[in-house]
Length: 265
Image (cartoon, helix red, strand yellow):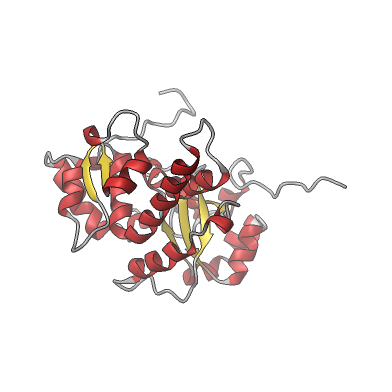
C-alpha cells in the first residue's frame, strides 16, 4: 500500500476492537450482536435479537425498501429500518438500540422535511444538521473550562494545560459513520460535538437511557438548523489514543486547526 494511503475500512463486525475506549458504552450489547453476525446471521436479524422490550422500530432486510421511497420516510411510515450487511448499518442499529428516542426524533424531523419539500439535490439547513449529527455526532459532558477551550480551539489549553480536568469529562459517540471509521482509527477523525449536562450520570447502567431521554427533547428545529456543534478531533481525547500522551501530538495543525481568522470590517 502506498505511503499516506489509509487502509480500507472492514465491512463486517469481526474487525471491531471492542477494547477501544470509545466503544465502552456499546460493548455489552454490541459485542454479542457482532458475534452473531460472525456466526452467519444477517445484521438486521442479529440486531433484532438484541431488542429488549418495546422498541420504536424493527430491523428489516434492505430489500424491503421500495424503489423510489426515501429511506427516512419509509422508517417513519413503517417503523422498519432497512438494514444492510455492513459495518455502517451495524453501528446504526446499535445507536437505535441505545438511543431509541433520539433516533426516532431525528427520523421524525427528517420525514417532516421530506414530506414538506421532497427529496432535494441539496438538503436544507435542518436536514443537513440532523444528518451531520446522526452520522458524525457525539455528546460531551465536561467542565466549563474544557468547553471554553474547545470552542476557542485552544488545543494547548484544552489537551495539555487542562488535561487533568478530562478526568471529569465523558465523551459519548452517537454518529454511526464515525464509529464505522474508527474501526480503523486515524488522527484526522473529527466528531461534531453537542454539549450535554454534566448532571446526567452516564457511568451508571441507566446513563445512556438518561442521555437519550434528554437529547430527544433537545433536538428542536429552530436551534438545530444552525448546527450547534463543535468540532473535536476524537483521538486527541486523553486516554483514547496512546500517541496523545506526547504533547507534540497536538502540534499537527492539519488536525488541530487554529481558529478561523475573523475578517476585518
